[in-house]
Image (cartoon, rainbow, N blue to C red):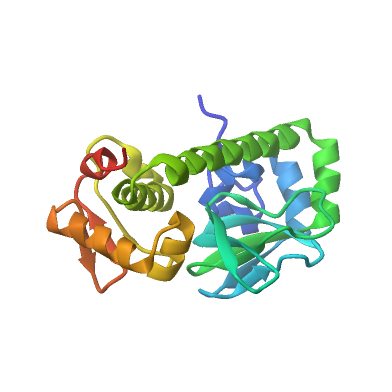
Length: 241
């Protein structure tokens, strides 16, 4: 039997009962009493598209657990240029544990709901809870594995394969149920064409050309410029190299 607590379980704090992200995020390692203690310090913040969650080089005062949406991570050069270095999805953990200042800028790529907790409160809970520490370590290692996979995409794949890989990444992270064989997916692109090009190391024209080709081949449909429909993710996956 699963040890997952029902979202209506009266032992779970009201703030947490309707949050499906907690079961797969860091809160999944906590017992109801620990959730209650954590909930005393947390609050949910909504960030509209384009709003900054934390800036590069600014002090880390809170951490966050993503409940909904997509966060874009960027790093800047001294001349003002910026590079998209990663994307985060629910239930990812936002913030660098034990860091004094942020090494990246985190910006809402779509509307984002973030459950925020003060740095000191969470670090104290981690010190008292090996299960939570292990959950965070596993999540960090997963993100490291994904970063290495993406390095392979950027370094070895063709432009067509890069664009297909990006679309597959978004589809399967925004809707994890779409990962099943033969599933369909529909989503709004969380990045502009310029950001996608930046993320993939391509030009805007190349990104647009490759997406047009996927549309012509009926691998995807494009509605209202940013809404993507994938009838069969297997066909998109086959284009990922």
